[in-house]
Image (cartoon, rainbow, N blue to C red; front, side, top):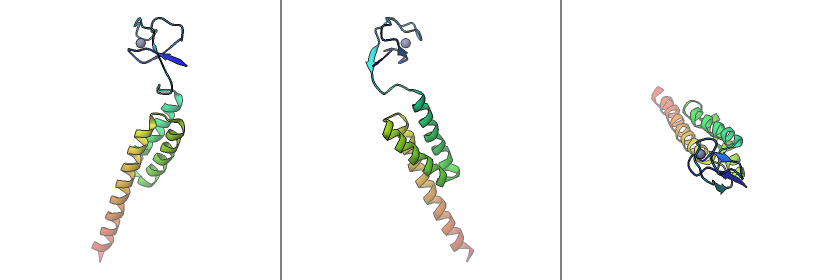
Length: 109
Ligand SMILES: [Zn+2]
């Protein structure tokens, strides 16, 4: 079990009486699994890359976002929302892209 500062949310030593990050004299609070760790940052990067790519290359953006969502579900981390956003955006842009392609073909005739 890790302990977190009740003011700034930074991890504290389990026997610490004040926070070394913000100096707040609190006993902290015990939490599990909702702090940002390296895995979360990694998955957020993947999901955010998915969101960004969904504007430019929807196919790759969708793939990355689905990968991000699968990972986020497995680890129950904070990347879930970003991954879902990426999937929705990629789907929308993919549909738009498809519609525009079809329209271009129709208009060429
Ligand atoms: Zn603090």
